Amino acid sequence: MREFIAERFPDVPIYCFEAHLVQVEGRRRPVALVGGLQPNLILGAAVGARFVISPEKDPDISPEPLAGLTDVGPLWNIDWLDTWPISFLLAQIREMRRALGPDMAVIPPFFWDTTGRATTHGIITTAQKLLGERVFLEMADNPEFVRELFAWIVDAYVKLIHLFADAAGISVTGLHTGECSGCMMGPDQFAEFAVPCLNDLADRVGPLRLHSCGNSNHLLDVFREVRNVAILNLGSGTSIAAVRDRFGPIRIDIMPETHLLTAGSPQDMDAWVRQCVAENGDARLQFEYHLDLNQSEDKCLQIHRTLEEMGVHSPRMEVH
Image 1: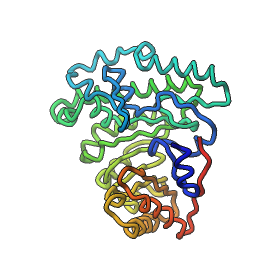
Image 2: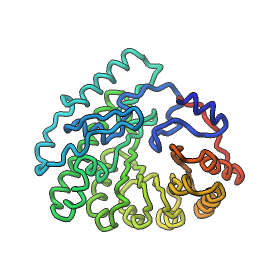
Image 3: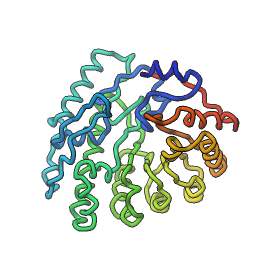
Image 4: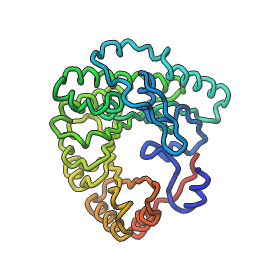
C-alpha cells in the first residue's frame, strides 16, 4: 500500500498511515509495528471483548464489553502482565526485538512511530466504547460511578503506555489523546468529567496533543483548563481565529469538514484553505485529512495546490 501511494502521488506528501497518529519524522527509518490497533480496542479486548477482523473494514471489537458493569472495584485488580492480549503483545515485542536486531525499530501498541509520542483514545471516547451510550446517561444519574470508571481508564492507559514503552525500549515524550466523543458534550459536562482526566494524563505521561473530531468551538474555553496542551488537533468547522484568540501561537492541526471532501468543489476547498491561513497568522498550522472511499482525490489535492500557490512548500519525504 505504501508503494502504491508513493507511485500514485510521487510529489505530494500523502502517506499510508494511521490517520492523525503517525508523525512523518518518526517513520524515516524501518519500523515493525506490534499490535498496530486502535488503543481502545486493545483495552476492550483485555476486559472481555472479542476482536472482530473484517476483510473490508478496519478492525474492531465486539460491542460494549462492560455494558453490565455496576462496580468498578474489580477492574483495579487486573494484573496487566498476566492478561491477554497484553501478555501476548509483550511476548511479541520481546521476540521481535531479539529476531530483528538494532537496525529495525520495534514500535509497540499505543505508539506509531519512533518519536516516543504515545496515543490513546480520550476517556469519554473509551468509556463509550466499553460501556456504550449508557455512559452519557450515567454522567447525569450516577456521576460517582462515572468518575471512578474514568479514573480507572486513565490509570489503565498510563500503566499500559509505560509497560509497552519499557518492553520496546522507548522513552515516552508525550501523548496524543483522541477525545472523539467530546464534541457531543456541553462545556460544563466536559469540564466536570473530561478535564480532570486530561490533566491527570498530562501530569503522568507528558505534553498533550488534544484531538476533537467535530466542531469544537463550544469547547475552546474549557480546553484552556487542560494543563500542558502542546497541540490542538481539530476539525469540522472549528474556527482558527477563535483558537488563536484563546491559545495564541499554539500549534493547530486542522481537518476539513467532511462535506468539503464529499460534496464540495475544489473551489470550495481553495477558499477554506485560504480562510484558515488568513485566520492563522504566522503561527504553526498543519493541514490533515483522510483520503477515503468516494471522496474525490482532486479536492484533497486542492489543499496542496492552494498551499503551493501561497508559497507553502511541503515536499514528500521517504518513509517506512
